[in-house]
Amino acid sequence: MPTYTYGTTEIDYDLEYRHDKRDILISVEWQNGVKVVVPPSVDQAQLDQILQKKAPWILSKWRAFNEITEPPARKEFVSGEKFPYLGRHYRLKVIQDDAFDETHVQLLRGRFICYLPTKVTNDNRQKVILHAFKKWYLKQGEQKIHDRIAIYTEKMNITYSKLQLKEQKMRWGTCTANGSIYLNWRIVMAPITIIDYLLVHELAHIVHANHSKDFWKLVGTILPDFEERKEWLRVNGPLLTIQ
Picture 1: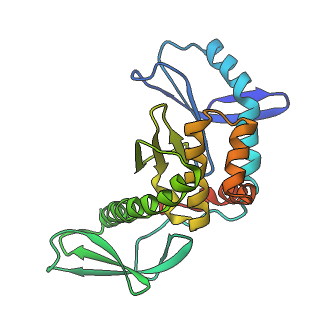
Picture 2 (picture 1 turned 60 degrees about the vertical axis):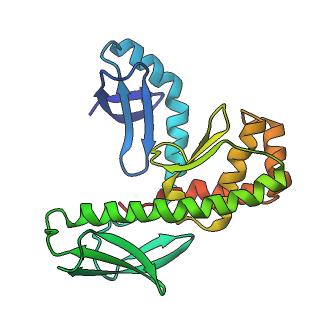
């Protein structure tokens, strides 16, 4: 594993060369560490220059992750495990039977039920149930975020062009120049108050593209306690996972 030295601190990172990338991409994840993706044209001198520039940001991310004391256990997708939705945790019951044609998940009477066809083998069981959970989160979450954003578009007198949940490894939310808002699908595991903060945050970006004083003032007029919600997401965000 390559290492970059910043002052007295050594930063280990995984390096991947990708022909489909034009720019250097650096990600810092709690469980996977630092990953650097570069196009083949980038040499070591150029990479070191970028790492020097990004080192303070990388270290700040690691300091934030160090506040999280207990990493989530990797899910086995078996009956009895708990899975989060809207800030609460619900136990899973897996029912495997020949009567089911495909795997699907329901939240029924306070528990998650996974209906699993008998043809699903132990080798791909976890992958299949994970896919079914993601599909459920996306479907239920889409309805929930559209219900919630309707409250804040009226309060803020702001319109958007599109709202969608999607896979985003490095961001909780993005707002494009044309007013399209994309949220990380994992946010539906968080309490409603945190979902609301993220929606207000992205709506405010339609008015203010950057994180200026005016941006935060607008967020604060809608959510006076936004700093507490922001801090909750910073500390607890890495726990919002089912993998």
